[in-house]
Length: 153
Image 1 (cartoon, one colour):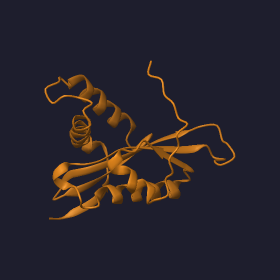
Image 2 (cartoon, helix red, strand yellow):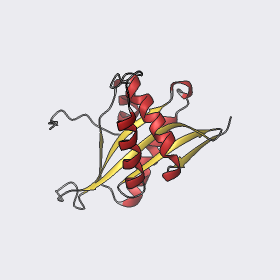
Image 3 (cartoon, one colour):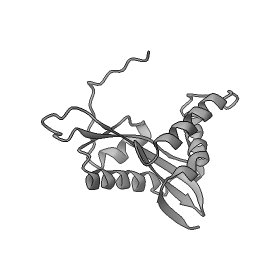
Image 4 (cartoon, one colour):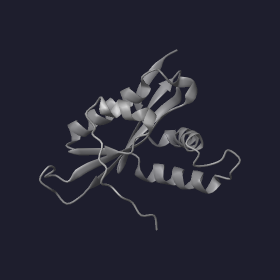
């Protein structure tokens, strides 16, 4: 089997959706029997509109097929003492298809994201970690913060 780490572009929209749907199903956020056509369309539109501009994504290919993915959403905020540029990145959807796990794909993708952030001047990375993924992030220096809150409108 051949494996390759690649930066995703528009041609990966369908595969990006496939893995995102697997992630949502595995987390119990959607049911396999649920009609996901609206979510699929919105996801693909977002991907196509933002990839390479406000979002950068990487994937691991196994024999040419996308087996794992991870994304970095980019944004600027008002500078503060620890981040005078205000450039930040939110890491999300680090996911490996079940049949491809235990190959180190998530680690490779996270390492690539961190490297990209360093090369491009992004000063802060943050994410929400699953229990399974927390160790990958902690090993790379991420620390837990308990002061964040959210509101869905």
